[in-house]
Image 1 (cartoon, rainbow, N blue to C red):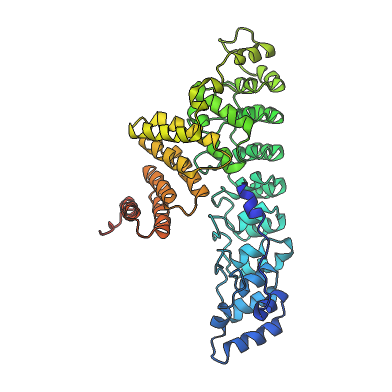
Image 2: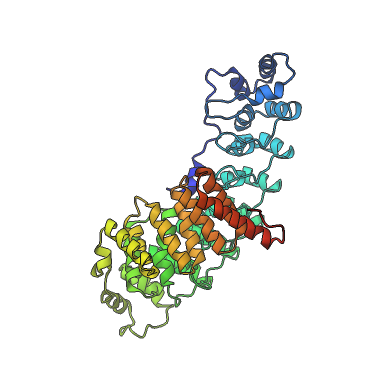
Length: 477
């Protein structure tokens, strides 16, 4: 499922006020009627605010949420200025009046009012997403401009990245231009590997890729376990993307990082778009070859002649390829063993999991990762979060903290109410010495499983590490 689309599908107001005159009056914007109902609701007790705050529609939204969502500025002003209701109050869903209001360009007046009266544009409403992420996902340029002009954080982070990531994911070029005009960081990473450029490539948005490159997006691969734009383009057959990537400095002579592409790429693709069969087979093939491939080799493996023609002109000759021509490269890759030749690929899912568990017990973590990775790729359409959990633990044992975090975050996305997913995420953050985020993950796990002593101990340990790192007093036992 596309994560950005989850935000994009959220309408301005989806509740109903059937049978609820109090909500109806707020929804209609009839301030006179609403005031009369509010007074009657209080019954002369002098506690009108408390009485009005208790009113909810069928979805748990309060009257301020309803009024804001439907652009009823006068009702909002009465609730905020006369009744002194909390302008940042969260509904049952976690939404705020502002996050509802920004969902429609018709609500500019009420959004401006809310922002002028201290509504927090950076308050997360779900999975770290805030009002700016929502407006960006919907492509509402007016709202995005208004939020940014009122101080919204252009680089705020959510479960699907920064607003720039969301714009790339949803192919919102006009919104992306606004974000870049407000100095959005076009190279900011999240989940250790994703940048706006990599997101735009995943979304197959050539216009967004060009915008990001013009703004200074890095097209090179620096260090290990980094997303290589050119490798991804070759993997996915993005023929039209080669020119702008190569002109911007992408190096066709840098092979893919085998460990990254074999083990992390499927996670990334599942999170963004789901794995298609062609890409799935290529990923498994790369895993079983145990060696890095150049973009031209990847294109040739999938018999993409046009891609090979383009890349041949810019790629240094490979010594092992006797005939350095399009036909020669295509013929060469046919001699490489295929995924079907490896017995691991032929194993069924249950056996892959079993052998992975056996390898883990033997402390053969590399082999365990291989089995879990193939199992993940073969099971891409019906995700098994336990595989990501197990592989995350393997990465910890192997000293690969960033990879452990990637798998832990994937695990938690697929099973958000599983305490062990929170535990894995916290453990990865601890390994990376990000103690504040570790505390948050362990605390989330304890909320899901209050009796879990292991989570409680880890939370205490992470709190101690955090306080020590800040030079404050250690948490008592």
